[in-house]
Amino acid sequence: MDLALDANRDIAIPITFVSGPDETRQRIEVRLRTFRGEWFEDALQGVPYFERILEKGVTAPIVTSIVRAVVESVPGVAEVVSIRADIEKRTRTCRVSELRVRYSANGSVANVPALVLGIGL
Image 1 (cartoon, rainbow, N blue to C red):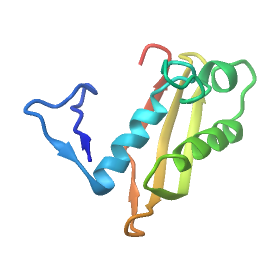
Image 2 (tube, rainbow, N blue to C red):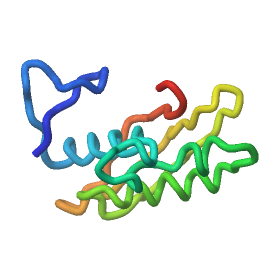
Image 3 (cartoon, rainbow, N blue to C red):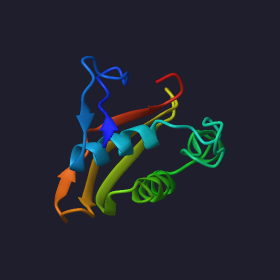
Image 4 (cartoon, one colour):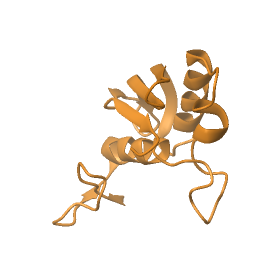
């Protein structure tokens, strides 16, 4: 069980908790918004945005592969069923417009809401 986050990614007030698929979905969103090296307790946690995604010449298949690996490392995710990640070079953002995961707890498949990730987001 985790603390619920609001739309601004702050702890929801009044304090509530999420569990099951909602907890896993929230963990996916948090993991994808964490830059590698950002967390002081484990510099290897997070997505290698600066090192691999927001660099010159990156391709959509590379981004998709990285995002898939990150999502599949989240506790509660059995597999990524489908994914689409695109790079917007002008704004230096990555848009995950389609993400369907199979949860390990009950085997159900669900969509994770679209995410726009990148510098300053």
